[in-house]
Structures are given as structure tokens and as C-alpha cells.
Image (cartoon, rainbow, N blue to C red; front, side, top):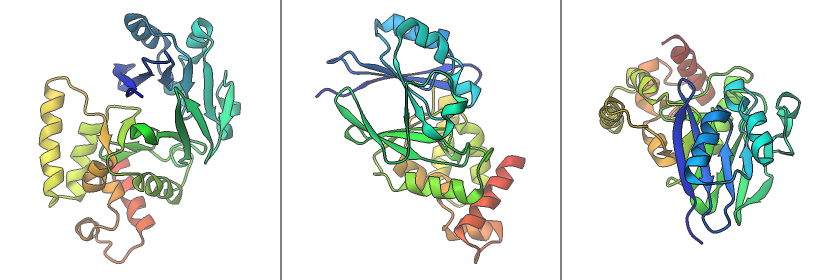
Length: 256
């Protein structure tokens, strides 16, 4: 079995489009559909036929391209059962623990409430791939529009249990701004300091900072490091619960 080809590209203001393609079967999936015209153009450039759209959540900047892509290719459109009333065009709904096949590979569904109530992520263990939508970002996490700090903390904890080598694709290019916040709450983290330098260099060249990995995030993302003594001391929350530390980090990031 050959590895899936992955085409990651910028669209809208700061969204990422991601297309998966299996050269053996020809099956091709778009992760979310932020911009139908841009995705269609990328498919045309590669000569790929869209067979699937995998939808993480209902926000407009992740679903606005569905209608145009559905009209052009009639793909299977898979999204969260809990948000099916808010996402037009789904042909199949899935919930936590469900699996389905894409190009001969098993795709596992992980429900990750917090950013939205029914947000899901797609995990392909055979490829060490996680499509995290707006739950986990490089050096950050999604805003809590519909969930509680406990919801999001639980969701991130589940994702952090995946193998360290898991490659993580996220919905937005937020890494540089996340990095500027991260160093304010984790100033003594040498791995983070080195990463910030690399990120600044990449963005200066116009390069994307994704994908990241679960292992990388566990070493440098403050939202996955609520138990770290240095972060707790910086926040003045040495004896607080992990959820309370997470909530304070999210509050500070919202105001940063």
C-alpha cells in the first residue's frame, strides 16, 4: 500500500485546505470545504476526482464550499451526527468511536467538543494522520464558542494520547500568533523557544507551519501542558486543577 498524497494549501484569509489522494484507487478526500473554488482548482491541477468530503464542524469557513463541490463531483460527505442539522448536504453522519473506510484505510472518528458542541476529528492510524479541525492548533487550541473549559480539556487530553509521531493537520495558520502567547506563559521552555525561532523563519519565507505532530505539541503547546510546574508557577496556580489551569490559559489567550 502506497502512502496517501497530501496537498495542503491556503485559502480564505487564514484557513488551510487539505486534499488526500490515493494514487492506487483514485479516491480523493477534501478535509472540510472552506472554499469550493480553490479546492476545485487544486483538484483540476492534479487531475483528481473528488470522492469524499470529511467535515469536522459546522462553522461557515469550513462548510461553505460543500454545495459547489457536491454539484461538481457528488462525493460522499461525512460529518458529525450532532451537527447534522447545521451542515447542509451530508450524506453520512458519524459519532465518537465510529469508523469508516477511505482508500482501504480505516478512519476513526473522535468527538472533540469545545470549539463547537459536536466537533469531530478524523484519525487514520495506518498513516499516522490526524485532521484536528479547530480543536487542536500548533501551539494552541480553538476558542470555546459552544463548550466549556472541561469539554475542551477533555478533548485535547484524548488527542494527546495518540502516538507522538501522529502528524496533525489543523484548520488555520495561527501558529505564529499562538507562539507569541505561548512564550508568555512558558518562558523557560527551551524547546518552545527554539520552535518560535523556526516558526518566525518559516513565516518570513511564506511557508506553512503545519503539519505538526502530537509529540511536538506535548513538548511545546501550553494547552497540552497544564500539569507543567513552570506554567503553573507562571500563572500563580501551583495547586490548581488541570481544568482550572486550562481555563486560565484560554482566558488569557482570548485577551492576548
